[in-house]
Length: 253
Picture 1 (cartoon, rainbow, N blue to C red):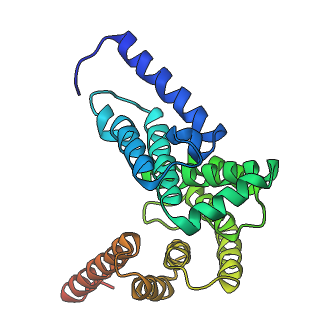
Picture 2 (picture 1 turned 180 degrees about the horizontal axis):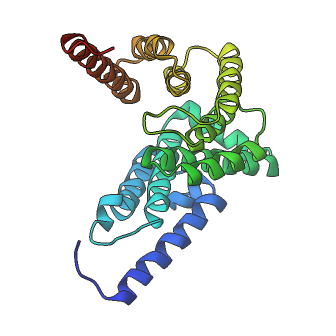
Picture 3 (picture 1 turned 135 degrees about the vertical axis):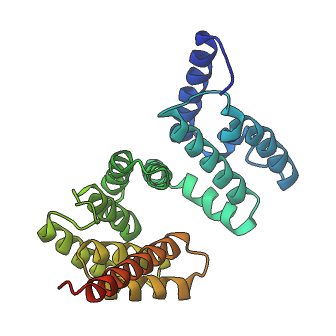
């Protein structure tokens, strides 16, 4: 870590908090600092300037702690704003949504909370992710993707033993059923199959979990979570086989 004066970090933190507040309150044009009539070149130029300022690597000299998730969220929203406004069809839909009034602000806030939850989930901050997903669901309670992430994060917060098995099997089974119901109403989603596989593994259903992870990879071969969980299953299986071999070798039952 680089060295810096205490007040330097406080100034940086203040800037982060101000910008984080803006991403929750301003529309995409305001965030990027462009007029509604701006062309793609101007939007791209403004985005690149902001991207240099708000990429998390720029803050590598600071121990951001909890503020790191806010920086990641800021960059994610800026990136979404850029991609939306340079795409003709997406921009037209966004402009129409702005004209629909206050309700769209609620939807945008829900989407922002959802993105924040995903960022925290990726960082392993399960409690923070749960809180963000819960806010997203309260703002838009008919979005199955929000609901699935909230339920899965609740599963991650359940106490588990040293092998990863859940202590509260009753609640884990309920979560498995709820995720199954959500899946029934959606097209195949690799991330949802991975959620189901993870819960199945926590319930001790290793064969079912393996099948779900393999199905997730068939849908998306780059699914790193499914790959990691499959490696875990196979590693455990090899250890079990070795243990069984030595038990037979030395006459143990």
